[in-house]
Length: 341
Ligand code: 5MM
Image 1: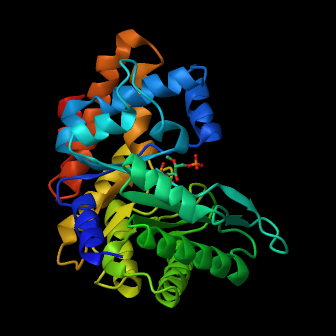
Image 2 (image 1 turned 180 degrees about the vertical axis):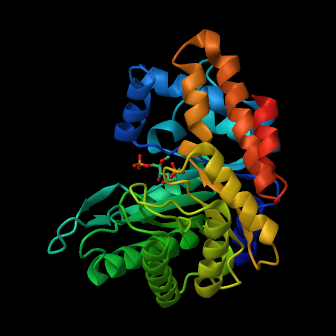
């Protein structure tokens, strides 16, 4: 493993003023997103949609440091025959690849899952590297509910994350380590804090056991937020303060950067939370975004599957990318949103 190279890529992924576009929706998830805008999910519609995003010059060149792709996308060509991965490289952004193969029920842990995909991962990573991927992503899913999460689910998922991360580094690929604590329930922010703290501590312990070089990885965590069905949502300042406190307690300073998932937050909340954390400042790592829904909901709606709407889709994507790029520097202001509207 050439650690200096991994470190340089990790630093570039979290450079101030830029963040990551999570465009790695698996077939089932992109179908759900397209259903919501009345578009049939076909190989061509998925290609057209992602081509629209990757050809958004303002967003890609100015605000997006890296793009997480799904297996289908990394092998796909644009309408003019240019490989989609080349469009990302030409924009000066780094291509990455989701390598987990989704979740399966975890035997003996009702209601909980394990993320799979370790079998033959070394061979898959070598092929992706050859195609141009320089980082990868693996998402573990932890749910909060009655009697869950269990220690077994937290530990098993943390172990798989660490095995994946070690395999990535051996293949000269920067691992994004994503242990997502879902915000689906009715729990309050303090319960989210407590569970995320346990999950992060377990994850870093397993990363240590697998000898993962922290300087050559990126953490992609959830923020400390109240569940969507909570009686009382937490305010922006509370989310920012508690998330920063949580990360300081769990994430070693050797990690170059933390790129958050949006997890179902509204577009503007995801931006406001990131901005508020960066305004606190004085942190040992760069804090940025690795959003899927919070970057793509607006362009999906504006595009709606119509070639005539490509420019509108790109404008919507560029706007959200710019708002989040400003938030990654702590320079966003809510007034910028209404000006653009
Ligand atoms: C873009 O969505 C990703 C893929 O999910 P599936 O494998 O279920 O299709 C997802 O891993 C995503 O990268 C992260 O959860 C961050 O996305 P959000 O929408 O939470 O910002």
